[in-house]
Each structure stands twice: as structure tokens, then as C-alpha cells.
Image: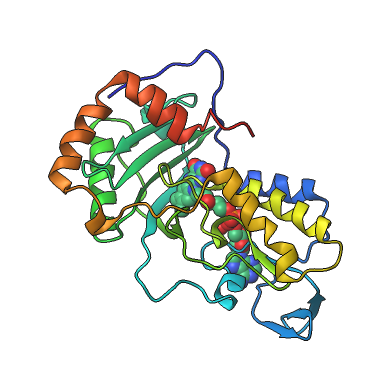
Amino acid sequence: MIELEYRRPVSYGIRRCEFDDYLLKRSGARLQLHQRCESIAREQNEWIVNDRYRSAMLVGAGGHFCPVAQWLGGDSPAPTPVVAAQEIEFPLDERQQAECQVAGHRPELTFCRDLMGYGWCFRKGNYLNVGLGREDRHRLSEHVAAFCEHLKREGRVPRDLPNKFRGHAYLLYGHSPRKLVDDGVLLVGDAAGLAYAQSGEGIRPAIESGLLAADVILEAAGDFGRCRLESYRRRLQARFGRQRPVPSGAGRAPSAFRQFLGGRLLANRWFVRRVVVERWFLHGEQKP
Ligand SMILES: Cc1cc2nc3c(=O)[nH]c(=O)nc-3n(C[C@H](O)[C@H](O)[C@H](O)COP(=O)(O)OP(=O)(O)OC[C@H]3O[C@@H](n4cnc5c(N)ncnc54)[C@H](O)[C@@H]3O)c2cc1C
């Protein structure tokens, strides 16, 4: 266990329902809430969604399973490495608050021995968020169960931690084979597969890609042909780097070697602070 202290806040934790609600209200957009996107059709140069909404421009922002991304072709038939995660978020009662050793100002990360993923324990006020994500979805539930047992044994979480974990999936930047742009359409966030490869975090890329997309759409000034929208792809590359496939499966170093090297590096305070936390998670070198 390595504990790192910073003299100022370096990151914030917030419940997603609160954060997303805040962003949505702040956007000032006209909203049609509680309506699933059920159908997408293209007639001449116009999109028609749910046989009802018509638009010259469509932005796919529906996360990993975004229907717009599916319309554009979804994932290639070649197996695509997907991050699979399970998490739970629940309010702590008074006894559980006393039992929970995770401090509100100090999120906890626990890396899998094979370095294929990590578990987390975040306190958000009186809520506790516990989860584990891996680049390899096989036996995910076993990894999650073992992680929870470890947390209970160490007294980090209440002994009666609920076990109704929710499953999720998404792509990492570099792995994503998705088509990002076409006539009158582009993808942002998880729909485009933009989460950071090292940490699996995707909120910042989702927000920043939304801002880049907005700029490109405004500059297109009503001409939404693919050529006019192509600059979105270039701006993504300028921001997040070129799409370089991250080695996965057979392309990775052998598991025993990774475990040996990972164990050494993750026991090194300098490496954990400067590389893991400040580069891989906080992206301190990249200004907002
Ligand atoms: C368990 C877990 C923990 C994570 N923790 C972090 C973290 O701590 N920090 C971080 O940076 N990233 C984290 N991530 C990654 C992050 O959640 C995503 O990268 C980010 O939410 C992507 O934002 P998005 O807006 O592209 O997609 P989403 O947040 O998935 O939003 C997509 C929206 O589209 C809606 N939608 C989907 N389909 C339809 C449809 N057919 N009709 C209408 N609406 C639809 C959904 O309801 C949802 O509101 C985590 C991911 C997981 C799975």
C-alpha cells in the first residue's frame, strides 16, 4: 500500500447522476427527456430519428452502445479489446459510515496482479463507490468477488457490502476501430471509443471531444459534408495523439514478466506518484 498526499485538491469525485445533470442543465440545450433513440433513417441530406426528429447534423453521444455508432457500422468483425467493468454505488448508513475506512479525500486504487485492470474504492460524501475494470472480460465476476473479499478482510469497506454490481463495457483510445465521421454525423465520447488507455477514464475525453465537435459543426456553417467534418478527426488526434493500437492479448509481454515488473514498479513511490497518478490518471501534463 502506498499513500500519497497532496497539499491541494488534485481531483474531484462526484456522483455521475449529479455531474451529468449539472452539465446537461448548463448546456442550455433544448431537451427531449426520457426518449430512447429507437430508429435512425437518412433521407436525402436529412436525419430522421424515431420517425419524428429531423436534422441536417447528428452527433452520436450515446456511450459504448450508442445507436448512432451502430448505424455507422459499429465495431469491426475482428475481436476488439473492450474494457469490462462492474461497480456498485450505494448510500452508507451510520454504522457503515463508521465501519468504512475509505476517507472522503483519499480515493483508493488496487491494481490486479496481471496489470490487466484495477479496482477502486471512492467515498462521495455518504455514498461509497466500489468497482473493478479489466481489459479482459473473462472471469470478471471472480476478480470482483476476490477484490471485495480483500477489501472486507482489510476493513476498508463495510462487511455487508451489497453484491448487486452493475456491468459496463467500453473501448479505449487506440483500440477503437469505429468510424468517427461521415456525411452529417460524428461520434463523441465513449461512442467514439476515446477513454484513456492507461486509466480507462473517459469523462474528460468525452467532454473535450464534445467541445471539439461543437467547434467543427459551427465552422461548417450548415455544410455538413464529410470533407467539412473531417477536421474533427484531426483535432482529436492533435489532442489525444495518433490512434496507436495498444498491445493486447498475444501482443503483450508474457503475464509472468508483467507481474514481476508491475510488482516492482507499483512498489516504487516515485513511479506511483509521477507516472501512475500524475500522468496516467491526472494527465497533469495536458492542460484542459
Ligand atoms: C464503472 C465505471 C466507472 C468509471 N469511472 C470513471 C471515472 O472515475 N473517471 C472517468 O473519467 N471515467 C470513468 N469511467 C468512464 C466514463 O464513465 C465514460 O468514459 C464516460 O461516461 C463517457 O461519457 P459519454 O457521455 O460518452 O457516455 P455515457 O456517459 O455512457 O453517456 C451516454 C448517454 O447516452 C444515453 N443513451 C444510450 N443509448 C441511448 C439511446 N438509445 N437513446 C437515448 N439515449 C441513450 C445513456 O443513457 C447515457 O445517458 C468509468 C466507466 C465505468 C464503466
